[in-house]
Image (cartoon, rainbow, N blue to C red):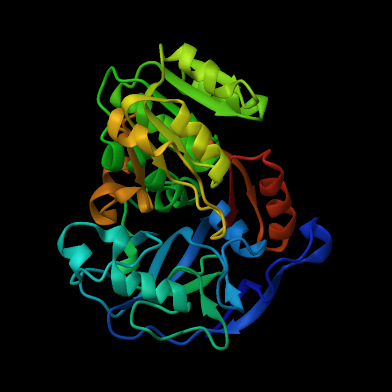
Length: 367
């Protein structure tokens, strides 16, 4: 079949993207699903910094590529047990094979065949169903249809609005998961979140959910700080030269848990400096591969510090996505507050300008 989707053929084109047009809406031939795969009618797909980092070249990928990884849709053809035509699904951006060492340990985010497929721009099977175009993280959700591995899909409540359902596949799963799975934050312990995009505010929602206190939000955008206070932050701090000291004051010496969601080595160093003795610093953002960070080595031992990475929110998607959706439906995880705007397929370049400027939280493509 022929699908209409947003294809990136060259990374690193200059901003504004409204002028350079890195994403071109093209007609691409999509082969039918093979064994263990699904054909899905895409209903909505979120615009994430992981997409932007491919567009600007800070997260190099094989080209050309049909972008979009945070998406939801309806199954229209199933070649996989457990899925039927009409099922509503959300996608995880790491297909978990279920058989490798990490999968056997319940660490789906570290699936080895899944990582290899994502790097190669293929589905989990190692094949491409898009003619002459690579898949993005096993999804390629910026199109009206996608073929995906069933290992990338999670069945969800069909009554959930698509523009909300899409958020659970990346922003919510990553941010909330960093709090509840990676850090395992306990009630009454202090936390700080550096960066209030979709993932950062999801982390803040997760920290509020588990009862972190005080709960500090840090960003450069005043409107995001205001929203963070409305979502449960006890303190909102404008990022600047005094950020670390202000966090230390707000948390009486440093946070028990600090989350860096910006994808910056410099911000990670600030998050570490804002973490108290015996505390845990969790990095969630994806910096350019050339970036590094440094910490006083002695502090790891003398202060019993922990630095942890969190990918996919250390999630088991089949467990966590339905769980987080249920919490949203119960009013305990107000994910809908993250939705900034909905956009059309022909307006993606302008929408990524907005994302790059830092003035949006989550824009969602609705198809």
